[in-house]
Amino acid sequence: MEGKVISYSTFASLLEKVGRFDVTGKTLLLPEMSRASECLLAATFRSFGVNAQMMETYKGLKLGKEFTSGKECFPCQVTLGDILYHLQKEKERLGDAFDASNYVYFLPEADGPCRFGMYNKLQRIVLDSFPEFQQIPIAYLSTKDGYAIGGLLPSEKAKHFRRTAYVAMVAGDVWDRTLWRVRPYENRKGAMDQLYDEGLEVLSKVIEKHGHKKDFRKIRKTLRELVHEARSLIDPHIPRKPRIGIVGEIYLRCHTKANQEIIRLIEKYGGEVVNASMSEWINYIAYDTALKVRNKWKMALRLGRWAEFSRNFKSWLKHWIEYYYQLWRQGQVYRAARSEMDIAPDHAIGPLEDKLGPRKLFCFDVGTEAALSIAGALAYAEHGFNGVVNVFPFTCMPSTATSAVLKPLLQKLRIPYIDSAYDGTYQPNRDAIVRTFMYQAYQHQQKQKENGSTSHYHFGKKWYLSEWLIQ
Image (cartoon, rainbow, N blue to C red; front, side, top):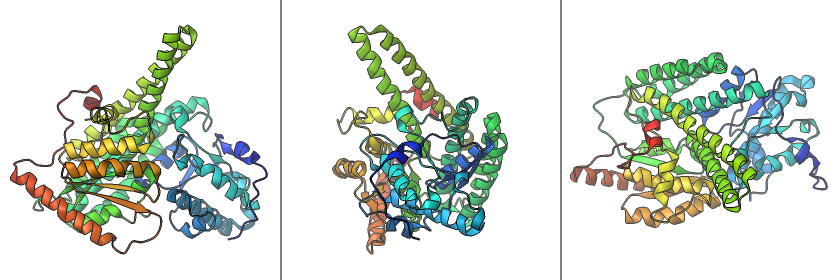
């Protein structure tokens, strides 16, 4: 696959063809990150009249590496390969009928120091190097405004879409956690994987049919029935295995092919895994946005700028309500599932921030996923987990900071910990590292039993409204 020489003489297309475009009537192409969440997000778009497709992933990695230098974050190479591979196949399928203007590529971004914020700019330049792909715009959502959906859909649909998409994402998180809870204990090998695929298809159809009506009860009922069916696959004679918590960069920890099936590998050597959720990040963005606006109205109040104070105070109240609305909806979905099975509840963001403060380990003001990863690992430790794995792209700055803090901290707490970095290559000693780690986790579990304690799910002694909402 060849493109013309990339010209850096003008960056006009970065302004004209990377932004928020009305995707109504277009084929919206979504790269896979978390399979469940992206699949259900695509279903949500379809429920609101957008022909959304989740692209095949990892088959175009060679293309992604061909058009990057190797200095980019690994997820950038994976997603670039996905879009180039998909468009190449579309051209082959449609021939002369292929029309680039019928497609929109969906690639969100984040502000701050993470390279994720530059993915869509670089990929815009690469797409422009192919004449046949120049008319494909890149649509994004951004952390700058809390992933506001305005601009992608008509205003009368945008608010309803955002809330349905959030519930769909939480449903995806819960279905993932059901998979990880059942698969290490299944009574028939491969049964949970089969049910997982079937369940995703069922949930997608329900969301596509009822999502635009905000019929969340129907979504919760369907999910509860699936979790009930999954429970029947557990062999009660298999003793509980060491529980491993995963933290790290959101794409790599969720993308099973990019992280070389790290969860299955841990399960192979006798572990039960809980991965940090997709909705944790969305909740964090809502929480962090509210904190930033709060700082603005406090400063305006000190300076006596009353108009600015009033504007920012109203904005702060709006974001705070949105945050607690998300926790409320998240809690509804988790309670429906947990009435059938003891899957792990999710972390609430407020208590995670409080875990960092007393030890001065990190600060939410710094931002990035490091804040969540460090606090999340501490939460796993408090909940009695037997080990922590930090999954991230090679050279990832936030995850490197996470590692620097967690290694000595968890060593002091005597909790097994490993870093697991990825750049598309295969480490020959990876199996040995994970096997050794799992042996340590097993020893940790045995000491728990000797001391009369077990791994359990709770949120500590201090009472938090957000914890009550999310349980």
